[in-house]
Image (cartoon, rainbow, N blue to C red; front, side):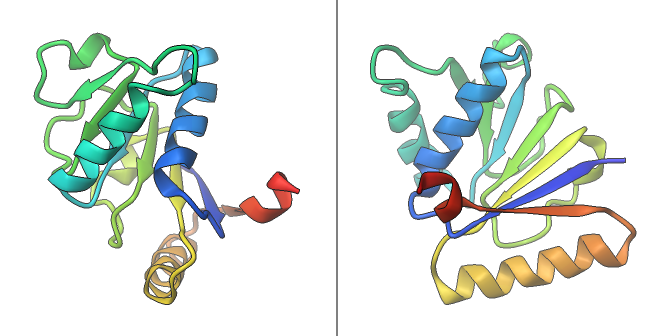
Length: 142
């Protein structure tokens, strides 16, 4: 069954993706990031080219021919899924493909609309029998 973690109170979603992606890649894991749209994907690509500060996190879009060999794959449609390891969801909806992944990470920002959408997703998973863990990012920072 998919392991589900909600990271909430995330002040900078894209920076959190870079940090979590870096940790996962360092452990030999693969990450698929489901972004809300093409603009968010472009922003995230820019950040990943400079993270960590002394390098970059190898990534590409899901339609790239190197996607199956690239540890971090970005997409806003969720059609081309080159692996089933870790899914990071930045969309307000429940990803239809989440159950094929070993782990799902839901990132929740500070806005009221983001929090309400996250509560809906949380209930969706819980009501279907998934164990949902929560991480308050503000407690990890301090």
